[in-house]
Each structure stands twice: as C-alpha cells, then as structure tokens.
Length: 201
Image (tube, rainbow, N blue to C red; front, side, top):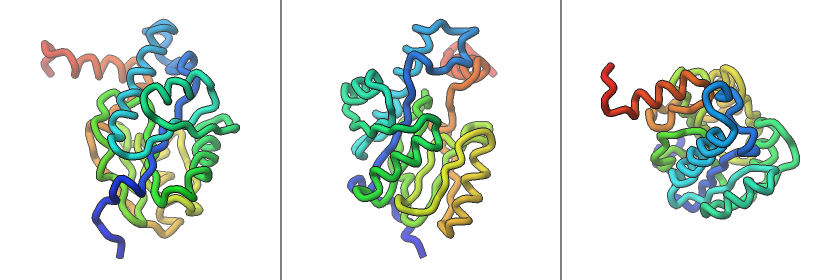
C-alpha cells in the first residue's frame, strides 16, 4: 500500500511548460492587447514558479526568451524539440526521469497559486482540476511509467482513466488556489470580480 506521506523536496521535480510569451493567451485578444497579454502571462508564470518553493523547478520550453526569463526567476530549463503540450511534456518527462522519482506538472496560468507542496505522493497520480472540473491544472505522478499525457478538453477524466490503466493510485485534490486558470475573457472577469474588494456576490 502506498505511503500516504508526501515526498520530501529532494525527490520531486516541478515542470512548468511555457510557450512564447508573445503568443500567450490569444483568446484574450478582444480584451487585452499583445503587451498586456504578455505581461499577464509572465506574471502568472512567475507566481507558479514561486509556488514551487524549495522544489526543483524546470521551465519546459523551446524559446530562448522564455529560457532566459526562467533563469532570471531561479528556475532551470528543459529544452524540448516538439511543439504541442502533450509531446513537449512527454519529452521533458523523459529527460528528468533519471534524476527524480516523481514530478509535478503545473500550468503556467494559475494567478492564485500559492504552494505546490504536499501534492506528490508515492505511486500516486494526484490531479488538481480546474474550477470547472474538466481540465488538469496540476498533475503529480511518478516518473518512468507508461502514463500517457492527455491534455486538452476534458483532460481530467482522461488523466483519471490513464492512472487506472497504469495501476497507480489516484487522488483528485480540490485546492481552490490552484483551480483558477485564465483562458477566456470570462475567466479574467471572474478573477477581477473576486479581487475587487467592493464586489459583493
């Protein structure tokens, strides 16, 4: 039976996939111009890196500007050749498998992220879904398994099925600070309403 105690910092790596900041959050283009979207993307990504705390943190990218930014905020860099989130994460996971027995993959667009600590557990796939309980904002799992990444629409349920297929324990964690992501203008509006001290529901 799996040890329910979370790993210590030395055995877990955090992977934060980030594409070109200048192309980030295009679905917000009707609300924010290119410069504002880039500023938002950098701000959220920095918050996620900081939320990793003492965990070894690698930004997954194939963009020199993103790599330079990662190093400026104290993260390492995993260079990948393949485009697309699933291929890039698969490539990055293979690169770190010999160094760490466990990994946490965190999206870079979590504006309320506070801590990624305590999520990783032995022989367990832990998933923090988005607030709509459809996507996968944070995914924690052992390295070196046959797990196939299933990011995209409805990824929560595909990742749950993948955990079962790989005969790994499964935990779905409701951590509000990690369940907020920013993909659409509606997400942006909801976050701004929550941040507005004068807002009343």
